[in-house]
Every structure is written in structure tokens, then in C-alpha cells.
Image 1 (tube, rainbow, N blue to C red):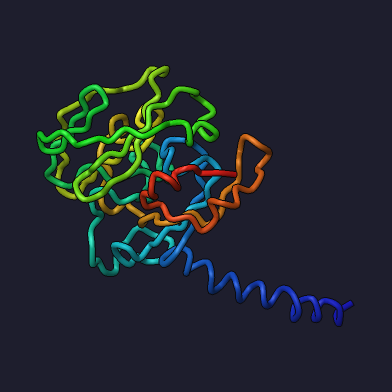
Image 2: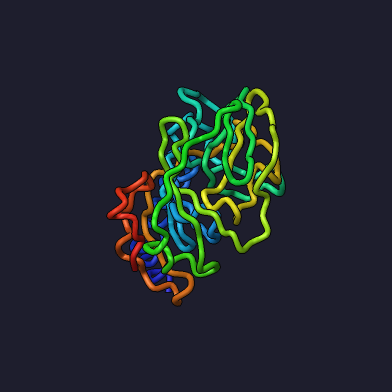
Length: 238
């Protein structure tokens, strides 16, 4: 019996322990992944996407904490950030809209940054209908947010906060919004996000599983960049 236990320890438990000893701090401080259960970032990110999180994008933290050891960058407007919600501490994925000192306003779905309306280019919604199963009549556009072009989506059939502000973003805080503007609990509801609660930046989809089809893999989204694709490649596919 002792011999069997030693073999189990040597062949299975010891390698597993070493793997966890290395990977757990690595995932905490360097690179991580985030399962997305909601559609608040559609059409950029879908329910069932597993997104890669670069925890070294802005700073280096003490593993398992939000304490900073070093800081070399701050979130930029248009980044997709992973952070802890000011309400309840849930880890969320949203887009950085407002920087410290910005004034943010929404008027009938049009975003204003420091008093300037952002430009929009409408897109055909047909390529997105397969994945927007909660509303069959979305309005899809490209929002030209400074130097960052990205998709946004409106759901006219829903009750939503389509106007708010103007709100001033205080020092050390950021204003976050979902790309699915009518289906996102974001800074319009829970307020500004402190800098030290931002975990990292999401840049790609590692893997994707269709939550409406028994977790059927969306193979075409695996290793998929979150940057805006060309209109011809805008379909998310399954």
C-alpha cells in the first residue's frame, strides 16, 4: 500500500503540485483568462467566449492582490479592460470610454467625450443576427472613438439608458461601457472604476462555446483578435 501511495505521489500528485505552484502565481500576476457569461460586449465579445487577459499591460501586481509593484502604463481610451466592479466586486469586461478628467455624456445613443460627439458608421446587421438571439432587430455601427474604431450595438426593442450625463471622470478613475449599449450594466449604473481595480487588458478570444447550442464550439472564433475586423470578416460564425 505504501509503495502504491509513493508511486501515485511521484507519478501524479507531485507533478500536479509543481504545475499548480508555477501556474497559480503566473495566472494571478502575468496572464489570465476570463469566461464571458453575458452579452454586454456584443458584437465584439459573445457569451461563451474565453478571453485572454494580459495582466502586464499596465502594471505588475503582487500575486493574489491588487497591490502594485510597478506601473508603466495606464488604460487607453478604447481598450477592453478587465476590472472589479465597484458594486459587489464582480470581475467584468468592458471598454474604456472615459479617462481621468474627461467629461462623458450620452445623448440618444450618441457618445460625447469632452463635449465632442463621436462619429458612427452604420453596418449591415445581417451578419450578426445569428449571435444576437435576444433581439432580432439590432442596429450595428462602428464607433470612431478617438483613434480606436470598434463595433457598438443598439437594441431598440429594449428599455435602456440611452441618455445620461454629462459626468466628470475624477482623477484615478475610468468610465467603462459595454459595446452592446442597451444591454450593459456599466459605469452609467455603478459609477467610475478606480485605477487599482483594473486587472488587465483583453486582446483576444482563446476559445468560444455557443451557450445557446449546448456549448457547441465556435471554432472560427478560437484565437480570434478583439480588434475591429474588416466588414467582410465581421461574421462571428460557428
